[in-house]
Image 1 (cartoon, one colour):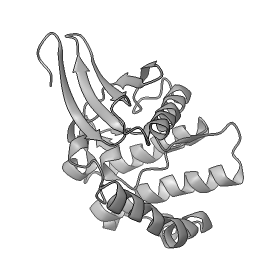
Image 2 (image 1 turned 180 degrees about the vertical axis):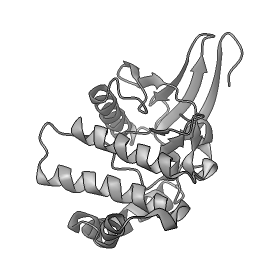
Image 3 (image 1 turned 30 degrees about the vertical axis):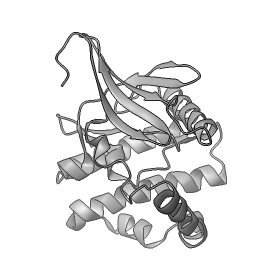
Image 4 (image 1 turned 90 degrees about the vertical axis):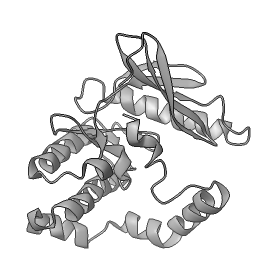
Length: 221
């Protein structure tokens, strides 16, 4: 918690800029600031920021998703959500995963796929045990549930089930096991063709780890 009347703390700093937590005595907000991005990544950083803003705007009013507070050319400001990242909280309550599945269904009905739920830091366990989602930079928005959207939505669900398999393997239903056993064709193409390129770029060129941001995002909510 931030206790001073005006305070801020840097949560994450990388080639795409900075993420910081700010408090003014009445409210706390998380600010994504692209002004510190490397010049050759600045356009991509701003594009990803706009994607996040579009997703948060489409999800306005949904409990468990940060509220979009403000957006300008270089910065995005969103509401702070209290909670611990999944890899810290290690949820063992089946109700958490049921609620997370309901939250995902609300996202998909609103026309948004998160697309980055393989990372545990992007799922929070709030103080009351309920789920929340953060980091919508890779999210996609669609007004129609076309084939690619449905495939991406299925991957959101499959990644949630992979986390459930890690923490509550005995609670998986047969239908959930079937989903885990049959990745979508899009996922198979990603794993065999694009993921090796992604890992080369993120690990070798940008210096990211597998769980990029896991430590830094411990307090990013």
